[in-house]
Each structure stands twice: as C-alpha cells, then as structure tokens.
Image (cartoon, rainbow, N blue to C red; front, side):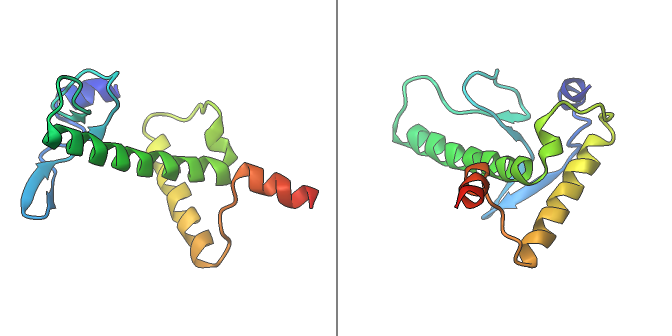
Length: 124
C-alpha cells in the first residue's frame, strides 16, 4: 500500500519544506540500491564531479541521522525490534508515540543507553 500511495502522490500530497530559500518536496531518503523515483532521493552512482560528491556526502549524513534515530528508538523500545502485527494505519501512531516518549525520557534525564552499555553496567 505504501508504494502505491507514494507512486500516486497520495502519501505526501502537495507538502513541501523550505531549505534555505529553496522550496522542496518531501522525499524518502534511500541508498544506491533503490530505483530513482520522484519521491525517493538517492545518491548519484555515475561519474561524480565535486558537486555530486558533495551531494552524496550530505545525503549520507542525513541518512545516518535517520538510522541513528531509529537505532535509539529500537534500543529503548524493544517491541520495535520484532515484526509487528499492527495495521499500516496504526504503525505510524505507535512510532510517533515512541518518539514522544523517548523525548520525554530524555527531557527528564533518563538518557538512552545502547545495548552494550547496559550489559557493561550490569557486569560492573
């Protein structure tokens, strides 16, 4: 369903963000394995000039931020580590709730600890 919604322009209908002074559509960030789509931003793979290398570097930094954020969510909320039987409608609500709860935990000083940190503290 998600792919169809993205292809039909239903998922991000006419939503745009402004970066600096440039208005841009909302897109999903992907790696080189994904096909180029109007709603999917992926790195250049052909001959790279300095502008394309800079674009790829910045795209990679953005993807790393997203991957780390999901890593933190999965580290704090272990239920996100396994397959869920939730509907497509409810899954975004659960992820948003996890984000809100994560931010509340952080604001109250309950800092996130990676799995290896938890194990190291347990053994200490």
